[in-house]
Length: 462
Length: 119
Image (cartoon, rainbow over all chains, first blue to last red; front, side, top):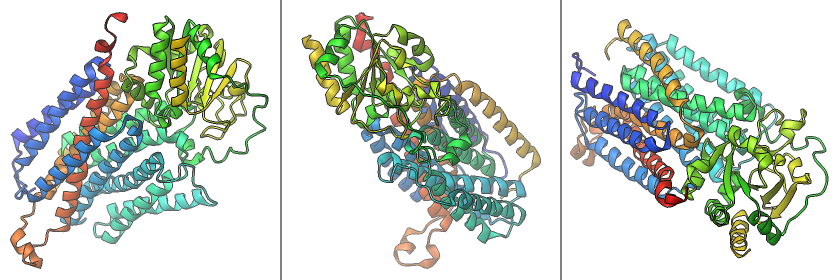
């Protein structure tokens, strides 16, 4: 901090790191170049960290060494052991860690310099960083808890909740503004931190599991913006660049997820979807037709084109390998197999793609919604595995439906549909799904994993 | 703490705005196929806040012998402790984030060897 001259070598290292980060993300535009891109980003990170270790302000290495070692061990263990099905929880946790780091750096800076030696702008950036960091930290922890099943996944709602949240938010922002205006208002700074932690919890508990893809993306964005404001506080450009990239990536994903649900971000955050609509309408009526394993296997085996539509149920049943086995059995018989992936299937953006890739499904067989929808009329059998809302024709046909206008995978246009479902209950959103009552639809009840495994066996024997 | 000079502030804003535009361009090209790796990759990259925590965790001389002897004057400052925790969490993100991103991307590449001539 004391040095006056700029450390040109360090600044140059940071510049290189920034370029490598951008090239790394650019590599992600294609699966074949993605890994190479990430190696570049890793090299950039290594250069920046090693360069920083020679920073003149660092005079002792004990705490740094301890922190790096502990962090590396935990990080490596997580990287190796976390199963792909738990990717949403892991990602939520990492948003929390990133946010905690940003918040703590901000608080540390505040204790070191106090408010009064900082120019107003720096105080503002610091307050923003700490406020965003603290609310993202607890919000992400709650989200991770919900995804892991530690915290109840259903929306927690009570009377006056929105009013209470508004007051919390108002007081938090009030403290934030006051600490910018008044350099010595230390108690208000800490009050802001506490309110931030509390608001993060309150923000996420009313949100249902089905809306998690949006929440994950938003928290991603907040964590990134908190890191970017750290860059403003420390006057460090690589921090600004990396944080901004993270923040905007999260923002773009949030917008994409919201579009894929035909909802606005405010609606997701304050709508409490999933609890409000339990009583919605009489819903679809009629009879669900059950199909036996044998019949389903025969129908699949003699089809010429089969499309699998996975949903979150695929992840909970850990059925990705079973789907792949069935698909291979079908492909061996000359059946064309494709996979239709809805943008919000699962609990985070891209969740289904990762699971299927884990099961060695070639990514060329994974189709986005816009690509696969025109193909359903020529599809002999559409197999829905643990998906519900993303194939609900009410979204298209019923303007009164709570999910009206949400783009769906139009499996009901296929020649026949087989829905794998654990029981007759409703999905996570609590909506009745008319697809299940359509004449083209047959229901195959039971655990998706064992059903699929048996189907694969039967298909081989046909 | 050096007083922030307005030129530096303006430069920082330029960096922020340009990074935002560039980020938008680069990230909107990422296919939905890779959205989960994208999220964990950007997370790992924003773990660069590690460099901020490193400086804070390392700026105070800690006398461990005096600390062991119970000397109160040698206690690490709050900032050092906060910096230490920040180093831990940021390192988890960097190491864990890059590690898991690579694990995922490896799965997206395997296809060629698995399917070979069938396609």
